[in-house]
Length: 246
Picture 1 (spheres, helix red, strand yellow):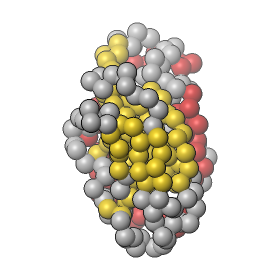
Picture 2 (cartoon, rainbow, N blue to C red; picture 1 turned 135 degrees about the vertical axis):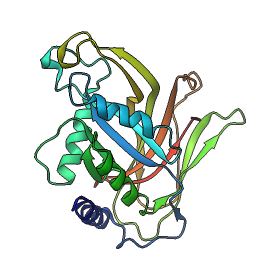
Picture 3 (cartoon, helix red, strand yellow; picture 1 turned 180 degrees about the horizontal axis):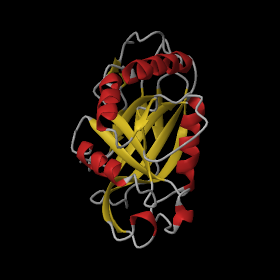
Picture 4 (cartoon, helix red, strand yellow; picture 1 turned 180 degrees about the vertical axis):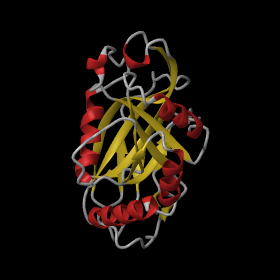
């Protein structure tokens, strides 16, 4: 039942996004990793199992996981030290795209279109398997001779109808946090790929394009990483490219 619901939702969103009925387009490929966004909170007692599960999936080269910390549980006695106000807005946008009236933690959103409880291993695996059947656009990161990313090239897609946003997400590879108050008092939790900033680089309308990246010369590539996400304004992620190495 879960898989049927997810597949139906995916088909509806892809049609809204502008792709035609699951048909692969020239230049599209599925080599890019699946993106798993986990909306989590240090003040949520049911989140640690989901955080641990995300840590497991972070070892899979075919999966890009992101921890998006939210602040709406801060009133329970502990202010999440990694939260960003924009994460709640992003989660609300996903809710609107599927007609949902509520947001929650831990919630996992896979490729911008499949939504499951983040601690439900079976549901998460099922959604990821469904996502692997979707076609994706190949993003080409342009680099200097020293490897520093400076721009991203977007291919043309003749059958695309709509608009997509090019996002730059910068994230910390690992953060250890000791929680001193609230529902998780006394727990030490390791969070992986903690999203720290989102920057809208531009819009894509289906034609070939090259978009410059901000200056990342002083960025800490050892302790941090980054990714370019091409995301339909309807929700689905159409392409992704990591900027650094795992």
